[in-house]
Structures are given as structure tokens and as C-alpha cells.
Length: 78
Image 1 (tube, rainbow, N blue to C red):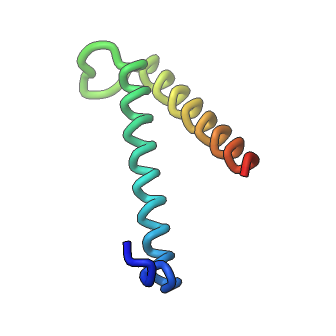
Image 2 (cartoon, rainbow, N blue to C red; image 1 turned 45 degrees about the vertical axis):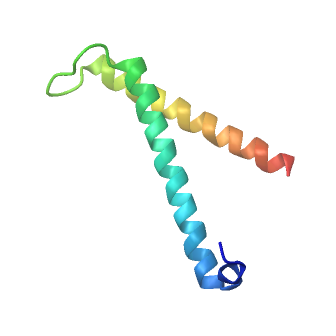
């Protein structure tokens, strides 16, 4: 990347936002894959069972909690 681009505050902000958006998309993809594999057994019907819904909710909550914990630990290391 051209160094002069990063000297432009507006462009640097746009790039930072796009990087954050990409990280969020990656996290959602990983969360979806991990929780789906853990909670959905077989082919789902037209809607999730109550146990599948609870499992997906708990899995997503744990995944996000762990992601936040890891981010905080990395921030404390800096």
C-alpha cells in the first residue's frame, strides 16, 4: 500500500473500518460453523427444535465471551 494513503486521515479511517468489518465477518463465519456443527444434528426442518435453539444461543454466547476475553488479554499484553 502506498504510504501516502495512510497519511490521509480520512482514508486511514476508511481502511480501518473495512478491516474491522472483515474481522467481524470472519468471526461470524467461524461462530456459525462451530455452533452449527455442535448443535445441529442431521438436516434441519423448517425451524429449529427448542434444544437446537438453546444450544445455538449458548454456543454463540460462549464463543463471543471467549473472543472478548482473548481480545482483552491481548490488549493487556501491549
